[in-house]
Image (cartoon, rainbow, N blue to C red):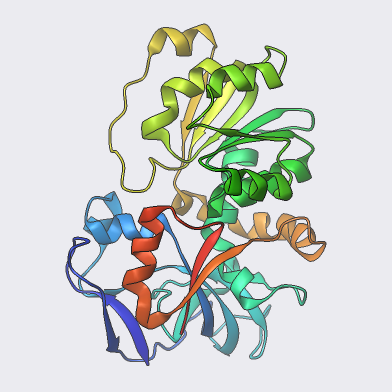
Length: 324
């Protein structure tokens, strides 16, 4: 089968399309024919060699994690799925490929109302949004939430999830097009950070109260600003440094102390033990249409290098997918 392989660390070295051996499912695993693969900042960071997970990768490796597709075969002990089932999840063998292995216990069933492209846009973005809002941020009905960078894959789903929880949701954007995109997803207001004072505008929108939860996609740029708009006892949940940014940031401690702020960080990999339970809670939201990703760009697998360039440029809405 064909797969997109990282042969050297560094974004100056193109990924290569190669023939690899088709994997066989072991106990608790499923072999899935991949219909679409999501492109995430995480795999770009690992490929660059500047992410902690790069040290655990053995070159060459198949890039990516997020997939949607159809089950072809199941390993020993898999009873919840059967060949022909439509699924979404994280492939342990890499996502930019024609087939991959998924752990049955942390794989979701794709609703009939959702396309494979939409399913591939779910795994890391939706689980990250849930981790930020529910697990770390403890968002509750009536809370005010700011999603920094709402037009991206995580941000767009975080807006919808926060609305489903019953929160007031605000977001930041860089253009009118992205503002309209986020407002259509359910944001109450979209603040253009290139034209407006974000802390001032957020405090105005909340009548001086501030937001209980910040979902921070661009931590290296925004942390100081977040502390100016966080409510007392608020939570700032860092889900990303910002694509291509980092890795260090200065924390103004007096501002954090003055707000009794909690600054939290997360990694989607650490969520693994909770994923089966989270999938059960997400299922009705997906089936009912409360959460629906937007596919901004879809490219053939042969254009995987271009997909990373588009991701780094920020010139897209929602999610970028690859199709085998």
